[in-house]
Image 1 (cartoon, rainbow, N blue to C red):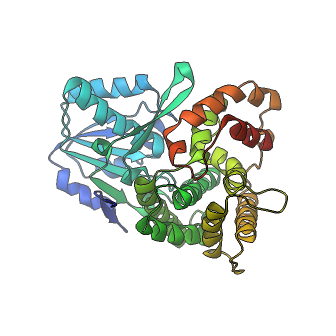
Image 2: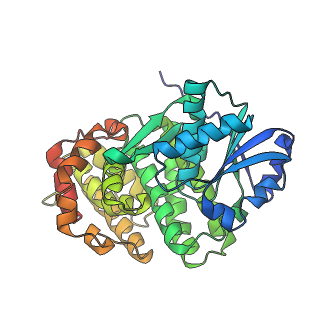
Length: 374
């Protein structure tokens, strides 16, 4: 028996922000980052509110001390509603504030609203949050229904000005989400349908959004794709790609979408047992082949050819997005990576996302993947 639940109300389309008028008389605690304040994006939210407090002390990979600071300000403001506006860091931080604020100080939130300003994490519809323990160099996934947003507002106008490099990084994160969801040990038919649609959207619209940020159709489709990807992996979890990305990203300071893009072809090869012109993990390879058929003009029932097609198309897309294929292309030396190899492998295997990887990973496998991306 399976239980699949999508509890977040999604409001999308032009002027979706107008729905905030429903909470204009509530005490609204806004979680965002400094850039959203500086560029005036937050004002697009506050124009609909009467009582609000802006907490903008958010940095990428939000550490625990920022979460604690936010909780203290929530208590002082006596907030009723949490509104998170920004990328994954702001939304993840707001989720952690909501959860730990309730657990440690009894702070109750009547409603949690997430407003993404990038098209990548899908965090607006998931019960996932990733927080960082800086002192240990760890990224820790927090997974609980208690942090699921009540409402997600997808307003295309908020993503039209996202810079090309961030568009590429976040778009590659979307692609990684659906590929990992599709081959997860918890895969299901509903998530499969979402993944098959999203992978086609990414290959049709991501390059367009990257090359022309004012392409409204491309921006809108990628924003919806990101949300759908979040809905998919919220019911299936992810896999080793994210397990390594969390571990390596925290220690090597590589943006999440970029490290995902570097890892993705190698993790697909590892999971399918691709080598010497063969695949040893046939069932996994068949899943990858099915996904490749959703985006390729060349249809195949051959698992090995399907895996190779998928890897080839990902590499071609990555090249069109001018993304690095290796850590050295990103700017890291082999020495910088190898000194962290053991710690990355240990953390990746302990990561909650790795639990649902289709092939049981071991330290040798993770180390081999790391060496392949040097």
